[in-house]
Length: 385
Ligand code: COS
Image 1 (tube, rainbow, N blue to C red):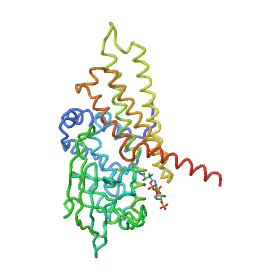
Image 2 (spheres, helix red, strand yellow):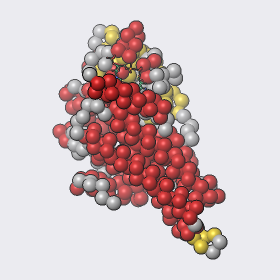
Image 3 (cartoon, rainbow, N blue to C red):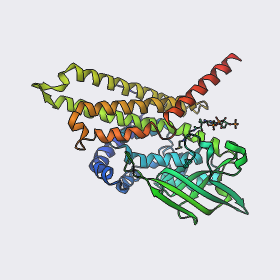
Image 4 (cartoon, rainbow, N blue to C red):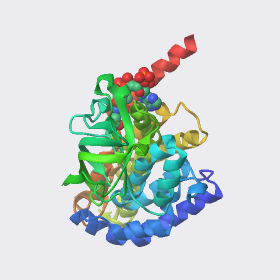
């Protein structure tokens, strides 16, 4: 199948396939089992310059876009979505700077990230998940510094990242219009890490609390203007959701490959189970779903790369569809492998655990459907005018 990838995209795909096979596959079981952070994989990503895929060349990156990122994410996630997440959660943490940072902020932070410094995005709190505007963390201007107080929850790359983009309230009375985005560096006094979560899947990646107690940061670390933090967060998620969709696609495609292979090797009733129509039909449905998800993921990424502004709907569609596909395809892969699929000897049970989070994070699939629905109605109203 020809996906009309550019020369660069084919190179990224091949490079990531190689890294996934040679570097991720041998360590995936260990990191899934122990939850230890995969620093050796981070080194491999650094050595291959993967941190710079979507960063402009003037800041030391490759100057690529959403499609290039999705190709890389898909290939790495075919083998291990947890380890790959350590790389592309940095992309999520970088988007606020890429989208709304000023020249000084870009010149200071983007080269560090392109060279392999990890980043993280801090929006979610204990009582602000889907209702992102309900955040309680505050930032108060005091002279030349903002003083941050509050706790962020479930932050991917929390405690291992060097650079954090944080959404905090500068004016609680204004609701979403009272939020602002900030850059916080690790080791800033008053900034510590809380509980490290023990997760069902993506166990190689770290998910931690971030705690701010009278944490003072220079006022230059405000991204854009006060009051724009919610919009920065929403724009960030619009850009990043195709990445989650690509993660889901990679997980589904990886599980499908294993199921096809296994069905050709496993013999029952004197023949390979691939000879039975019951199994063939399952594989056919799985493959069709994977191909449909790939179509939507690539379409959303290519549309974002045109610089279009109305990306919320297609980005949410890619995320919701690919993640639902990942859950269904990995569940069927476990079914095809039967007893073996349920055991840790094969990676499909891990893929099924990893798939689940793609329906939850960066906006639950219920929120995605809300975004799609609201945009549909808005478009219809606009067309009637
Ligand atoms: N791009 C730009 N601006 C956006 C936007 C987007 N995608 N989505 C909303 N906005 C703007 C709105 O236009 C509105 O601006 P005005 O104040 O000028 O009217 C403002 O943001 C508030 O929007 P809205 O009223 O729609 O906000 P809600 O609180 O109702 O939230 C949802 C809308 C549910 C879509 C939002 O809260 C959301 O995406 N939640 C999920 C958050 C999430 O993904 N969390 C996971 C953790 S982050 S890793």
